[in-house]
Image (cartoon, rainbow, N blue to C red):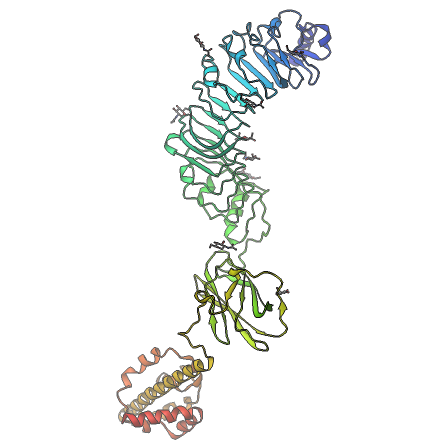
Amino acid sequence: MLFLFIFLFSIHLLQSCPLTDEYLSRCHCGILTNGESYIKCDENSLNHIPKFKRSYSYDELILINNNIKNLSSTSFDNIKTIKRINLHGNSLSLIDENLFRLLGNYLEELILTGNNQINSLEFLTRFPLKKLRLLKLNRFNLTNINLEKIFLNMTNLEIVYLNSCQLKQIPHINHIKYLDLEDNFLSNTIFLSTSYYQLNLAHNHISSIILQNNKNLISLNLSKNNLNEFYSLTISNKNLTTLDLSYNHLTSIDWIILNDKLLYLNLSSNYFSTTKFNSFPKSLTSLDLSSNQLKTIEKNLFFQQLNYLNLNLNPFDCDCHLKWLRNLMKKLNTTTWSCSSSDFKCQSNLMPQISIFNITFMKYFSQHGFSIQWSIIDNYQTIDYLQITIDKPYRTSRKISSNQTHAIILNNIELYQYYHICLILIHKYANDKYCQDIFTKTPILNKMKLQETDVILNDDNNNNNEIEINTNDFNDNHLYLLLIGSCIGALLTFILLLTCCYLCYRLHKYKNINEQPIYEQCSQHIHYPIYHSHPTCSHHQIIYNSENISNSTDSSRIDASLSSTTNNPKHIYQTIDSQEYRSLKRQHQQLFELWKESVKQNR
Ligand SMILES: *[C@@H]1O[C@H](CO)[C@@H](O)[C@H](O)[C@H]1NC(C)=O
Ligand SMILES: *[C@@H]1O[C@H](CO)[C@@H](O)[C@H](O)[C@H]1NC(C)=O
Ligand SMILES: *[C@@H]1O[C@H](CO)[C@@H](O)[C@H](O)[C@H]1NC(C)=O
Ligand SMILES: *[C@@H]1O[C@H](CO)[C@@H](O)[C@H](O)[C@H]1NC(C)=O
Ligand SMILES: *[C@@H]1O[C@H](CO)[C@@H](O)[C@H](O)[C@H]1NC(C)=O
Ligand SMILES: *[C@@H]1O[C@H](CO)[C@@H](O)[C@H](O)[C@H]1NC(C)=O
Ligand SMILES: *[C@@H]1O[C@H](CO)[C@@H](O)[C@H](O)[C@H]1NC(C)=O
Ligand SMILES: *[C@@H]1O[C@H](CO)[C@@H](O)[C@H](O)[C@H]1NC(C)=O
Ligand SMILES: *[C@@H]1O[C@H](CO)[C@@H](O)[C@H](O)[C@H]1NC(C)=O
């Protein structure tokens, strides 16, 4: 019913539209449900302001997206009570300074689009526009205009859009609340101190911004700049609740500088690769981190408070470390978040692993050499450095950075030899060694230029400082083995000696106390190996079992258990029965000889 009424009323108005006949087909007059009347012309239908028949009291004139170029001093003469003029999307080239000579007491909103040439705002100041509340200028040339002065007397002005106006600086207009400077020429570092409540600086060339004192500022839009630094003095920017930093070059942000009132934070389309949440604004509910370089996010309870979280288009490693996030995203009903490898399992543990280790025998000009390639999976960056060793003669390379993936060994490589090459990963938890043997036959000719840094072992004379030949170690494998052999031999002898002492001591004691020889009690257990089957015979097992001896390089255990018996060497011969002696002799004849020698010497 109401709509019908409005419809009829509109038709009535249409009939009494104050336009000359030639415009009636292109324009119409109407009334909104709130009682405001308007005149609106079709887009692309006009190249000048239409002619008004008589003075009518209309509220709004809408002529958007037309081709109007000139505004003369008489353009609005017949609609002098108009409150809102919208000429958005035209291309004004000429505005008469006396344009608003009759509108000063009525005009509340003015929207004009220029042609990038108009560089005077005299039409705004010639007659005071006391009621102007909103002003939108688009595509003017305000480079050299003193805007503070222009707006000085417009005490009702609250909202100002100066878009694409070639501005190089932020004007300070004290009484306005909303300033939109999207798409201007703001650049470099900006130290921001303003009294605005909302400020849009999107689509400029600002590279760094420091919020100093903006006590009123509630919303700040810095989207589409070149920001690589954002800083805010929390204490004097307390009211900030909306911050848009999307489409910038930020790699990180210090969460501590974000004040607790912040509700909305948009970090979309930046270069965040890690986010360390040392803090989180207490009231933040909406966080956009989409289109960054995030691989993982450390678990953080802060996220629980969000009701919007966008993580789309990040190269997440969806392993077990992101399980918590999957659960959170489920809770937030965010279905768009997806992981490329979405099993949320951790294949590897913390240890780094080698996935490729490829050695090729090459010919580099006159020299033979090895080209070594590898690839390491080290998700938690535990590797300190890498080293490569080669035998014939045994050499160790310099320390290689963990991000390097290939190296070349050049000198002393001979044909028709087996070489044993190892890659050693020195990491937080241990040193891992991966080795390969390669036979030097038919080298592949190297066609590429050698890089200094690739060569890790070269001619000793030239690159002395790069080579760390382990002269302290044994560079002869045979000598090395010989020494180890003699050490083990000496150890065995010592252990044997101790056992015998212990044995004879026990035997002696048993004979004295039980009048019973010990080997009768234990004889069935003496044949090895025996693993703790009889408490009184357990030491036999440790000592006589040849396997155990060679494994027990840790002799402290045995020493400790036998220390009480070592000072009784007298009855050594008696404590070992002949059967035992024979088997022992079979197994360790050589050792036994040594032992006998040492016993003799002891005497
Ligand atoms: C706009 O005004 C200029 C100068 O007054 C005049 O030369 C031009 O013809 C006018 N253009 C239109 C479309 O009215
Ligand atoms: C805008 O004005 C400045 C100075 O008044 C001038 O240097 C610049 O060329 C003008 N821009 C355009 C697009 O006309
Ligand atoms: C502002 O108003 C004062 C007094 O009405 C006047 O003297 C001054 O010229 C005006 N300033 C501008 C920029 O219009
Ligand atoms: C913040 O905004 C409130 C009202 O929105 C205002 O009263 C206050 O002065 C502003 N500044 C600070 C620092 O709180
Ligand atoms: C910031 O400006 C951009 C560019 O105009 C716009 O797309 C975005 O919606 C604005 N952000 C906010 C929070 O209004
Ligand atoms: C964040 O900014 C991007 C780019 O301007 C926009 O597409 C997105 O909708 C914004 N996010 C939110 C939550 O407003
Ligand atoms: C998510 O969806 C479930 C059911 O569709 C609903 O109960 C829950 O309130 C939603 N949560 C949010 C944060 O929108
Ligand atoms: C090892 O390197 C050689 C030469 O660079 C290459 O032809 C070969 O395919 C590699 N092998 C592997 C398993 O990567
Ligand atoms: C490897 O890391 C070092 C710093 O640790 C850096 O200087 C070097 O450029 C990196 N090299 C490559 C190939 O990424």
